[in-house]
Length: 256
Image: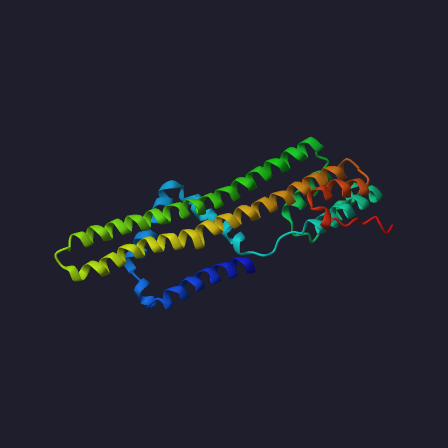
């Protein structure tokens, strides 16, 4: 689990709840009809805006916001440099033995293409195409959460307008004006909270995770193509270290 996401959600909601408790009772902010307007309206609008298949697929993408496991660039570079050494020493076919047990399907696919003797231009084209579609899936996931974040406050405003109409219809009963106004404002509160503490932050985390993952896969593509062309392992390392900040660069050859 991504500890930052968990802390953010718990901390954000926790502080809001503490503020609510300090000014009165938590029950003051609980209203079923308001929740139904915001949640129902938001998900209804999203269903209208996107095909059902896209919404079902976004569930798997959303998991990335709560996962902490990610590839480290320095480790991947080390693996690729080692592959380059083995390839130059034992031939390109020897890479099949190295990838046994590797859990990265993208790297496995890239190695298999090279081992099968696919032309470098075709290898690049195949992997770049897959990279584009991965990016599109990630973009769609973040876009759906952004859309939900945009619709939620709007649905809250709709609920507020409904509450105000109901309140104005009962102006001849002054005692009902205060509670009716409170319920009207709670709906906007729900919409703003969901948008700014759930939907939009998750969309931002997905975009960040996507950019990092795509960068790692681009690193793998360049590394594999460099190995296929028979580049010296030192050259492979220098090429790939361009993808990471200078302070994180560690050469395998300084001690050799």
